[in-house]
Length: 247
Ligand code: ADP
Ligand code: MG
View 1 (tube, rainbow, N blue to C red):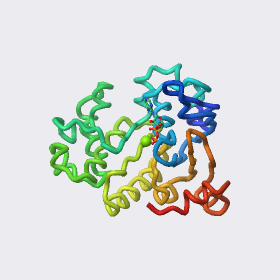
View 2 (view 1 turned 120 degrees about the horizontal axis):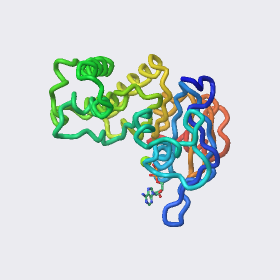
View 3 (view 1 turned 30 degrees about the vertical axis):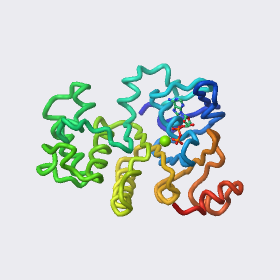
């Protein structure tokens, strides 16, 4: 990209209110290209809202958010979403579409040639360890929860976005499947060098995956640090308790 070396995503004193109630306040954070940033906090702490402001599923109302050095409001929302894959817990797969068509969704909108789309679907199914011949023609209800999540991740990666935004992508899975997909995601990050922002409330997931962890409480950042920093130097008792808790 032409802005190599500068921030991929930058929050400058960002805030958001719903019905007069601030749910995100004074969030400043710089995310470098290739970083794997995890947003963590309790339910209701503002994680999803923070993430959705980046691709303008929610419009921020205070401060500035920059993508590749430009205010996100200067992008067409469709262009922004093409450059940022988005994966969520419920996968959001269309039940009446095959795996192939679900994954091909964005490339199809972008009018890629059919052969290129087919090759890309094959490549992604292989990357996510779903043998293409077995899975491309299946419908989502003929897949396990873990396989559906893999397809959701493949779809988010389909148009080779600069950034992957993930909101509790593995939240609904059993621990063994979740661990397998975490390993997969770490591998994809290593191979692709993509910038990943992942929301979770699972501290073990955060410590395992994040190159940096951002702990939110009541819409504010409590601490930002590497997993090692959060473990060794928790900023306060809240961080200590949060890290120590096991659920
Ligand atoms: P988290 O993802 O950390 O659980 P959210 O960002 O989803 O938290 O929500 C933060 C707060 O904002 C919660 O109190 C939630 O009820 C509120 N909220 C989120 N979205 C909306 C909305 N569209 N309208 C009103 N309140 C909302
Ligand atoms: Mg959430």
